[in-house]
Amino acid sequence: MNTNSDNARWLNPVLGALSVSLFVGAWAILSYAHLVQPYFLPTPTAVFKEAIILVQREHYLNDIAASLARVLVAFILCALSAVPLGLLMGRSKPVAAFVTPFVVFMRYVPISAFIPLLILWTGIGNFQKVVFLWMGTFFFLVALIADAAAAVGHELLDTAYTLGAQKRQMVRYVVLPAALPGILDSLRVMMSVGWTYLVLAEIVAAESGIGYMIMESQRFLKTPRVVVGILTVGIIGVGLDYLFRGMRTLFFPWLRSHG
Amino acid sequence: MGDPSTNEPSARAVEAIDLKQPPFLLVDRVSKVYPSRQGPVSALEDFSCSTGVGTFVAVVGPSGCGKTSLLRIVAGLMSPTSGKILVNGKEVQGPGPDRGMVFQSYTSFPWLTVRENVEFGLKMRHAPQEIRRSTARTLIAQVGLSGFEDAYPEALSGGMKQRVAIARTLANNPDMLIMDEPFGALDYQTRWTMQELLLSVWEKARKTVLFVTHDIEEALFLADNVIVMTSRPGRVKKSLAIPFERPRMVSLKANSGFVALKSDIMRLVRQEIPDPMVGQA
Image: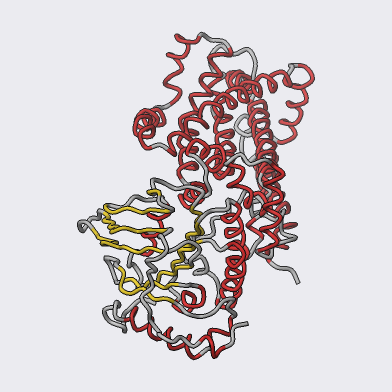
């Protein structure tokens, strides 16, 4: 007899595959049956052909590499800056009081409104794009990390104190290890948010990138290429997400597994 | 094994404080007032007690009488509004490894294995690895967790987690153990086992223990002295010396002297609960 959790182990990938097939199926029916005009929604075959052309003749892999590099560099900078600040905010009320108003302000401002300013400040090269992607994610990540750090139970800190730990040892030996799963989850979410800013980041004076390719194709109504771009980002995203989940089980063997 | 006839208490309730021994723990007119929306709430008022070295003291009293506040103040996790605590002649200024604490909630560090949890205090205090290892091995064996050294707390039962907590606290070789209802969340049978385990460990280490519990039977079974507290604000209602011989076995709980003393203490605690029909357990 199978329990629910036993079922889930083989059922989960099946359910995942099912949702993908439903999506592709709906797309195929709508496009092959000409229920929607091809320049609104190209057929899967057209998209596949266009993808081959892009890779073979138009250095699409370079675009992918350029976008990947921008997003990853911005993501790493974002993590390196937001994790320490978030930990500080989560564990120190004065720091939180000092930083919070500005962080909230920046979270509400539409990030694209900064593009003109960023061009003035940082030019139009890769640096501008990385700074833009960093800005788009940093203020969210700080808040998520601060929550994860604040959620560390005071019982654990009290226990550490009564075991002779000093205040300066708390972050390294208690707060950080306790908050680490929450931090990794936040990073996983913000990685996806970073990718959603890609097209915006590559609007300005880009000569490469998936977002750049999408913008160019849209201008010439090459709808199949737009779909190729969307699918590329989505597939990279699924891969990265899978990687993050793998890290979770690898780094935190002490967590109850959630299937 | 204690012979039941010698366990018969000659005088049921004896005033407990032994003035000949210099007090190891001195709680001197400690008061604690908490601010609240309804105005200040007094949790402890002029609470005083003292105990000699190596004594097992249990504190019982109605819910909300300030037992936990008392422990947190002795542990140094909270400062009293007035009064002071002396441990070994030194005033308590903050938490320290000389006063180990076991909490009611399971506070094993979930990211550390059983062995790493037991070694935590020694590691924080920069003890060399060989000493950490050997101390952990001895204590893990003493609390009956051999074979679980590399398990994470998540895989352990409640009783086993509290065994880890006890071993971890003892690893620091503290002068004193502060225990806040450590078996309160365990089922009845596990609780009995843990009480026996604690006594067997205590017989070896003979630390001074300050043990808070709701369970009068538990207090009586474990302690040399039982302090009954008044309802809030908590004061010492009565301090009793518990005469039963050691080592004690669970069978002691059926002893007529034990049962009589238990009902005496129950009556004292009952007096502090306004209406027994709505009183908390």
